[in-house]
Amino acid sequence: MTLSLDGFVADEQGSVSRLYPDLADLRDTDYMRALIEQTGAVIMGRRSFEMGDPDSYVGEYEFQVPIFVLTHRPPEVIPKQDENLTFTFVTEGVESAVSQAKVAAGDRAVRVIGGANVIQQLLGAGLVDELQIDFMPVLLGGGLRFFASDGARPQLEVIDAQQIVPRISLLFRVL
Image 1 (tube, rainbow, N blue to C red):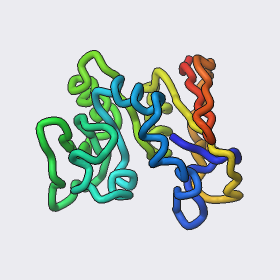
Image 2 (cartoon, rainbow, N blue to C red; image 1 turned 120 degrees about the vertical axis):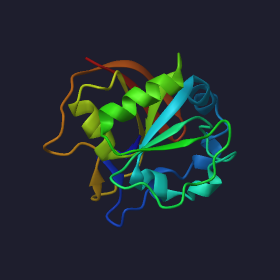
Image 3 (cartoon, rainbow, N blue to C red; image 1 turned 135 degrees about the vertical axis):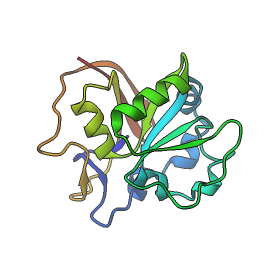
């Protein structure tokens, strides 16, 4: 998850463009290659899923692994899939998504991509072991907050910090 320094994951118009000006460069870093290698499955919310063109995910999306999309209603048309990247639309809640993703990931990590609400649900249910947050040196001044005022407040311990210009990445253990 990438945040502005003032804690927002999207601006007031719902755009994330100011948080990812380095996306093309980021893909060719050791940082991103390590994340990809460690990841065995992805969980994302419906909004994150729809932010891109789901049919273009095969072969193009960073994580060519099973993707579990939390949603109240699956799409009418299932996007393109292949032997590496598959989509499962989970309507039974975060516990079900985590359970299915863990099986698919095997001994690799389950990563949650985007979705402040999904992450809040997972934190509230005690289903998060680690929390990785990247900070971009921008102030959005408003928009969608990562941590809702009424959301979960886990205790965190810093495991790692690194600078991937221009972002700062912090890895926390959830206690």
